[in-house]
Structure formats: structure tokens, C-alpha cells
Length: 220
Image 1: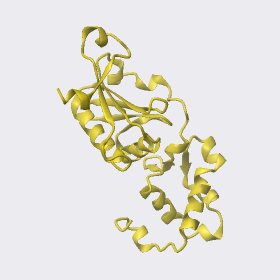
Image 2: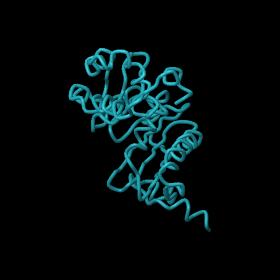
Image 3: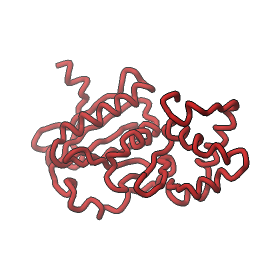
Image 4: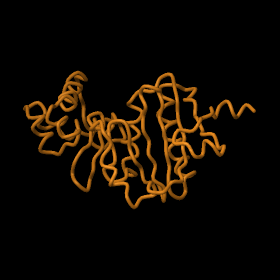
């Protein structure tokens, strides 16, 4: 991590020591009870041994670079997405947003191997775009330009489902597709199967329309 101003000056001789320090955060019951939201005071209590006193900042920077957390700078808190609540936050937060409209663009990604870390790393990489506090263990809402984007993972179907409402939907989708491709290439260079909804009149009126493989459609 030579690009990180803190880590480039830090020498960790024992990787196991750093892994143990990070696991103390990820397995901390207080952090889990707080839905993955930590502040400096809590991190100090977790890393309260003398061996960590001068290494708290490097350890935190290491977690950033390993894409295990992001910082909400306005509140001085740190979010660990692996410990987020299972349920989506209150739907009332969506009032007066483009999601109150009916017209939405939909897209899906399906793969034989779809680890949950793809979604959590997407949250971290795009945390500046997150809409308010609309994030949970299996999903997140982004504000990209005039569009609001919901990205949710269905672990059973090995799918990531994307819904977009508002203006500039195609630009927002292009942004999400680029980020997902970058993340998924590390696991599967061939990439996931992208699915697009059927545009027939019947499907347009359905909550769950039929989806076609984009890869297959390109062959015709």
C-alpha cells in the first residue's frame, strides 16, 4: 500500500499480528450490536493493549485499504459493512426521492460465484454516493446525479439486482456496471451474466418481469 501516506511509513513484521488486530474489530460484540458503526472511542477500547497504542491509525488505514470499512467524515464514524443490520432501513427515507416514482430501469447480474464481499466492497468504493444511511447487509442505495440506484444481493440465486429511478438512469447504470465489472474481474475474468428485463407490454406491468441474458442477445 505504497500510495497510502500512513502505511508507506509503517513496517509490520508479523502479518498475523495485524490479522489478529483486525479480527478483534470484526468479532467485537459491541460493534456488532451497533450495526457495524464504530467511532474512535470504541476502536480505542477494542485496541486497548499497549501493542496497539501507537498502531491504531495504521491499523485503521489497513482496514480502509483492505476494503473492510469506510468513514462517514461528517459524523466521525466508521462503517464495517460486514456487520450491517440484515434489514433495509425504514422505507420512509425514500419519500420525496425518485423511488417514489413508478418508472424504473432494472438490471441483474448472475454468476456461479457471487461472494458477498462484492457488494460490501462496492459500498466502500462508492461510499461518497450512498443516499443518506440507506445501507444494510445485502443492499445499498446510491445517489448518482439525478438518479437513485438500489443495488441488492440475492445470495440464494447468486444475483445482484439493480433498480434505478429518476433522471439520467443510463449514466447511473453505466457507473454501476463499471464498478461491478472491476470487482468481479478479480473472481471471474469472464464476468457475470448480465440480465435485462423483457420490454413487452405484459412484463412492463409486472413487478418481476422475465429477464434475458444480455450475452445471449448480443449473439443475435
